[in-house]
Image 1 (tube, helix red, strand yellow):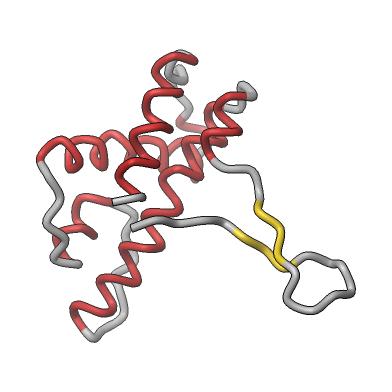
Image 2 (cartoon, helix red, strand yellow):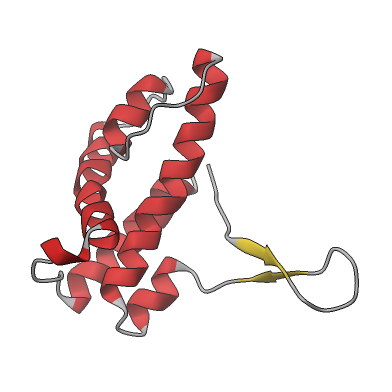
Length: 122
């Protein structure tokens, strides 16, 4: 599963799209919290779409990637499930900034962003 964040470009030419900064780019620029929050958001939305397809019902209002993967009936490997569990903490910090803990080191954040992309790319 590969996810790219695109938004319509304000240019007058129809259907022109521009690629936004990826989570890895944000992490590389030192925007660790923002990058890892987006690294959580993209698979959350994709998993919710897969839950919808698997259950023929609206996905529940939750942000737990492991639970969403189970509901979507996705056969992730144990190391991928462990990464999804780690990514859940990035969601908390992104949505509830008053609960901020120390961010991961730049090295850890780079590793997490890379692993998140690998999970998203299948």
